[in-house]
Image (tube, rainbow, N blue to C red; front, side):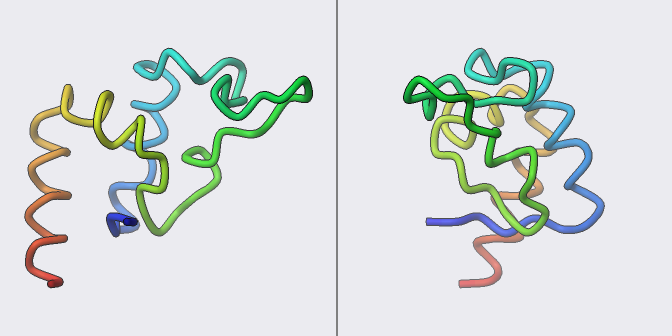
Length: 77
């Protein structure tokens, strides 16, 4: 399931990925690494939260942004 984000939320999400995700290393995702570097999907996405690890483990640490994203996605359904 993808959570939609607004244009204004894209950069805060990317900053949180870079600063708070232990699986993001130099813009690459360690979870996707199969011997070859794989770009972090969350750093290149501008329409939603696609990474379940980021959504469940990293995003909740930024309570205001997390609650904003949760609220707008509940309203969409």
